[in-house]
Image 1 (cartoon, rainbow over the protein chains, first blue to last red):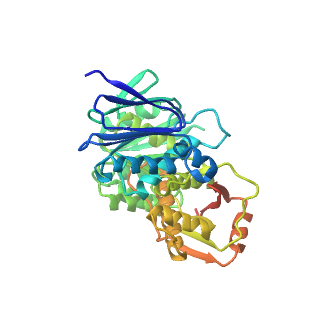
Image 2: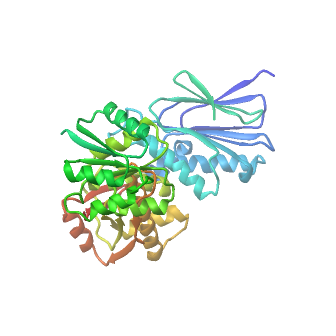
Image 3: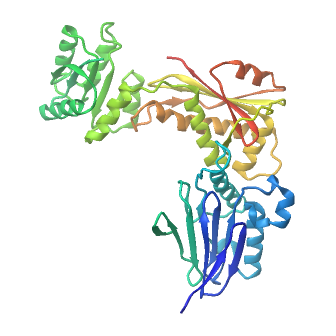
Length: 161
Length: 274
């Protein structure tokens, strides 16, 4: 089966139920990529967010909800549930949150982004099944919609999450 | 500073191994002495200057525990540092030894690297400061409450009721850790830890108590290289204050460290009592 690449940009999210799709997002630096997949229905989605909380800029969150962890994840989960996915069945994999040089000194946005998704998962009663976070290098993340397998590429190395 | 080291073990091979590792580590030794049991070691201590004793426990004639007891009851030898190297695996026994003043404990069999770590910890004994407690606090906050430290901002203040958490530790070192923050921070902490909405003052105090407990647990391993859990700790105490007086008194102490935790001021202090 030939695969179709579905690209998720920065401050963006996409869903799919097509086994021929591979969801992919590039250059996760301090941003976080969240991959969700329900293997019973083959429904899944990916979110690439930049900032931890919409409280930082509520006006912007209205026009760009996927820029923020809280608004982005809520919308993505709503969409996945509407497509037939069950929260309890969801495999959740997280990547990104690196410490990049940009940004005010001492303000580790990568870490804050990572803590934001951990907190939201805790609030939603969901576990993070695996994660590849931190460090200093950007990551590309791929999720194969045929089986939900997530792969991370960074520094020329590839690993399954 | 060149050391005089006394190695006490009934195994000649083990004494040889220990001596070799010390020579490999970058520690200057003026003199090596050896003893096959506690009685021989005490005889060496009577005649010569010794800066460090490395001792097994299980030896014929006089074991390490009895040797340590006699060293401690003799003014001339009571403060000579002792590191126990033994097969003893009972945590309670190791704790007792450390409470009796043994500086560190290494379990046999040990790798050269493990031994090196003990020696380096001993001679590069970290100068403990409140900032070490602060590091433990940051780790505790990230893990249990998803909160992180941010750069300090000048206009942050604590003007409301405050909660002070305090916990004592006893063992190889003795002291107290204190953490103080405003009631609103305590509520955020409670909200994040327990995933509860609209936490009350009781929940905030509970959260601060747990934060103090966990911070202490993360801080104490910084004090020693042994994995044996050598400290006893008290149940954390909580003290509240209706206004910010308690906060201002706390941060007036130059040893306290103040952090900005996502817009809330939190301060820590380490008080050493040994």
